[in-house]
Amino acid sequence: MATALAFVAVVLAAAAAPAAVTAATLTIHNLCPHPVWPLVTPNAGSASISDNRARLDPNGLMSVSFPAAPWAGRVAARTGCDPATASSCETGESPPATVAQLSVHGGGDLAAYSVSLVDGFNVPMVVSPQAVGGGQCPVLGCTVDLNCDCPPGQRVSDGAACRGPPEYFKNRCQLTRTTPTDVEPVPQSCRAPGELKVVFCQATMAAADMLIRTVVAAADS
Image (tube, rainbow, N blue to C red; front, top):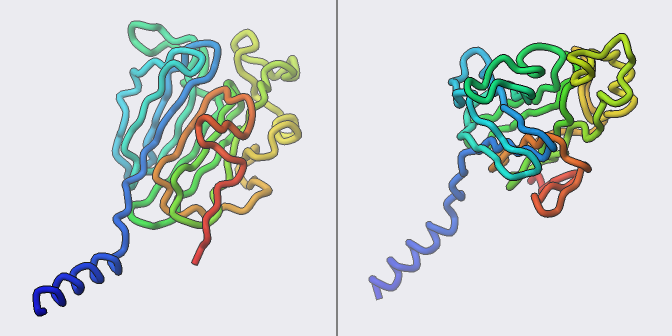
């Protein structure tokens, strides 16, 4: 009888214990029709998580993942790089360039993310949280190739990048930040995502095969 009661106590204790929180992963996926060399740059105080030599082949053939909790930094897409050195790139090493800004805390804390066109545009980019712990986790970014109709005076690198202006970007990509004080018109309160996906050249804001939804939300109780 005592043994049975002890077993029941162990089972109840295990059921009451909080589930372990999986450390977040940063996954970068390339759907562009050309190779991309991701540039992953940590903020001050965060560790370097990439040697920035990875080449992602076109059309979704490759992705790369890094542990990213806790971590804060930026992700940009470099294009036209020297294949041997992953440097001397046509776009992405400096403005103008599309940038994902990410902050992922450990445990069950809030994550923050955005796609910024403050420094200009070179490649369409979407950030999509996956396996979220709670809160509201909207998919953010821009699926439009803003180089196509970029004002002639704002074109860079033979039309491979665009400087702006901010209103041109915002009119076409509302779920991005186009000025230093800009915010997206959707609420964000994302707790403990298991993965943050940064996707280059995604065609729409929803892609079922990658489990990306327009808004990923769980009960915030």
